[in-house]
Length: 314
Image 1 (tube, one colour):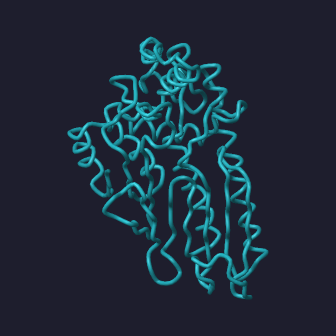
Image 2: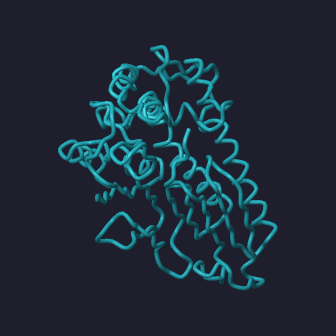
Image 3: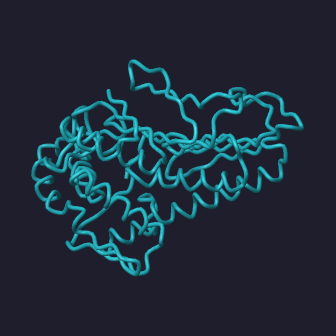
């Protein structure tokens, strides 16, 4: 499976109240009040970087290790890159006995979003992704796209997933799911909560989606750049979350990308991008995807269901 290009870096910037080093000067000299713990590696198939600032370097390193281990643990559940992950086993066998509670939690949340969006958001679209990938992988084979879509779309419906504490199973053979439109938000929230419990007061977590604890330590909000919005250079975050979605993520061709309209079985081209600000990253992540594949009238209805979110469209 191709890497999602929009998820380039995982960055966690966190400080205690005693931090004196400005966040926009990461290469500045350290002081006793602003010791740094950093890590570079791979998370969710993407190059990743985490930096924690704290007056106690040992405490920062301990917190960093906890975050890294949690990401790795959750990867073993949600990652399609890992053939031994829980989601990969479910997709292969069509059933998963004694599923991790995190997978049950995310699928139940996804089901609720599917209901509220009348199926516009649907984790069972993975066969459509595979159909497009197959059609465009071989030169000249895109002429078979319609045939592949017609076969794959029969497998798409969130209503065909049975979600129970002791078992998750598909009603149809060859069904498959992807949680790329929701798992990043879920993991972002989990890491944010770990740092909150560890006592960090000024935190920005970016795992493809953003979440924040408080604002910037310089008594202002976090300013998040929004390159896909023409009229806004940045959006402000303070104890809330942000997620963006658009066809720019993974493209099969100039016309076709990874966000599918389940009514047509192919790429939705209503909008270029959607950014959602919400109380948590899992909600922002799922709704950003949903808005991208919905018509204008359906988007209005969804805004009535979630009146406390902010939506930015281009």
